[in-house]
Image (tube, rainbow, N blue to C red):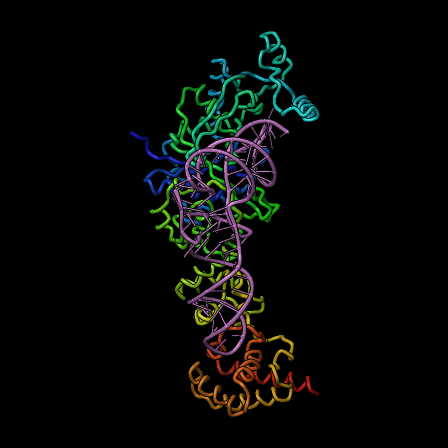
Length: 491
RNA sequence: GGCCCCAUCGUCUAGUGGUUAGGACACCGCCCUUUCACGGCGGUAACACGAGUUCGAUCCUCGUUGGGGUCACCA
């Protein structure tokens, strides 16, 4: 019989959730949901010095945004709490003391300064850096002396000096390390907090975690964990290390690369559907062609076996493409609702708020297939909202046209548009396309100045649809303004 | 540097002891077209190298090279 699947995402609250960590959380979640297991959120706040205020909230915000709901965690509780490691200090202390009593660990009184000097020297002598085990065999008298001197010790694990320690990773297979290459690492710090090594072993066991999914950068410390499980007499969980997300230079993705929190992607206007789909595809694939998948499809198809073992560069261009695909798949109402906050934030301040939702809804179809991120929608649509257009009058003049001919063309267009009783795409097309012919110019030579006159831009949605949304009054006013600009230009 | 991991187009990837080595992004053409997009069609582009095993290796083994990770009282 196999134990029920219980996986945890165990972030350290040191800032905003990075995509690499979020990906691990996604794999945890996908695996739990696929197997009907339990997904647990545990906060590893054992480094008082690195703790960042609000980080836990950010992490939860990021998870929720992607729809990664947890079954047990700090806010929802569960049978294995508390879910903050800072609230489980006694457990770690007891565990550490137990190993000391068993002879698997010992108190170390070495000062940070001594350790620092030791390391420096080891590096200078080209020796592999590592604790020299000075305190491993302290006599009771020496220990007593250190204690009475008031030195707060750390607890170090007594790593066997011979033999090997290995484990079977579900992705990487068997990985074996020589014990002689592992130093006596710290389990419990002098402030009474555990290190990651101790805390994760104690908690994963206490919380009955069945599978540990984490970044590949943890592989080299896994033997320490195995050694601890053995010392405690616990059965280690299954390990699944996944390859890292790399920056463009192929090194581990970090702030140096502008790395970015998942929340920044949200604020840039990437849809959660996109991020979910895209991130799942970094290091995992279904087959040789399926790329666009819903959350549900991902849950159904996810499997550890199809995870790769090579690090992957985060391909931003492809992300943009995929986001465009998802934006295009939205209904107009949905797109409108999602765009609203971005418009509110990104449109010039002098535009009246709140925005007219119905008007926004009319504009959306015109940019839906053009927007790659929600955050670029204000720029794409600003001329629908602003009164004043500022553009270089020279942009009004199309190919093989002059200021004079353009001026004349616009004047005629204005005259013809004025009497229109209905003002929509069809009517405009029926009026303007023949007009170009009548004037003896190409369609583009008429449409292009109109486009610029009406929008102030040279790249816009289709002219007639745009004019329809803008409305007759505003279009005429803008055409007349363009005429005035041209007059000024030629005078 | 020690230890560990990895290696298919520029990028993300599929793949098999015998394939024209497949897909996607990007890129380049062409088409559509009032601009920009979208869309359609087509194209350039990869098995790091060297041995070995084998009738035959991209695929299996070893080595080389390259890249990455890790060596804290951080996770």
